[in-house]
Length: 320
Image 1 (cartoon, rainbow, N blue to C red):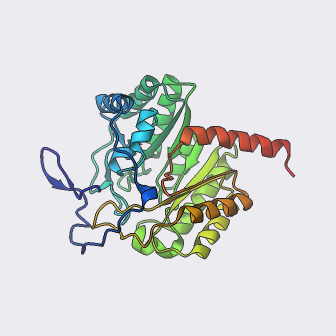
Image 2 (cartoon, rainbow, N blue to C red):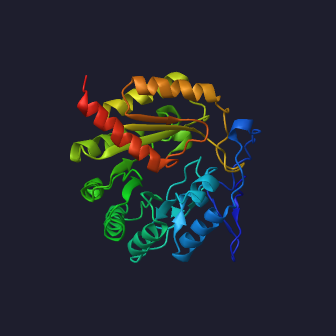
Image 3 (cartoon, rainbow, N blue to C red):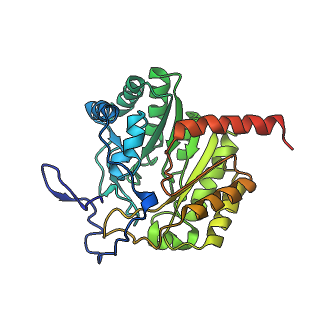
């Protein structure tokens, strides 16, 4: 499990806003959740390149269970704008607090790293930066531009914050023309106050809808976790909401509790239930659905992007 204390040279509390919470129980993981510990030569090489450039990955910060598999394949989700988030979501293992100023050299470092890794597809995400006037939108745009310059053949997927109360921010990011724009709803609206208190469900929906209005060629994507106390009918309603917003790709994965100070797992959802969600979502009109216990927003993102393009092409050639 991921611990609450980050063992750096100066020991510090990773989640100060969670430190006073009562410990939540940790449920024993079922067999279908367990994964092999990372350590292959390819994994270590990816780690070296990331560290060489001083970059942060959400794979490490969020304690992703798929890090061994993805880094062995040289798939990494880079997290820009630092490692400290201004939000305090109950599910998230990224540290919280007041972030450092933006590093103006970071876009260049990201472009160089993507080129060195030889990535066909890259996922760029970030912490929430409510402290910035544009929420970091211009920084996102500069990172996209740097990747285009350093690795022009690489397709780019971004996983953005919600840019809540940041007028004009979305337009800046969309104008940079990422190939995929991902923003996760994370959970059903009834769980927002407990799980995602700094966000607004319908604002996030509207953000995704606006991407399509601004540039219909960009694929849109969103994801949720299950096992947080949501009801099945709420998940189905969320699917309908995303389809109204014209979202192309839906991911559904199991919530995994980072520590006893984070939101408790309500239950481990059976793999058959994930398959049921996938069938229903495809019937509702999503171009692509990834639904399994270990699904994460950027898991198999490169392969999924190829499938997305093929699904769109097939739909265009036979619209009925």
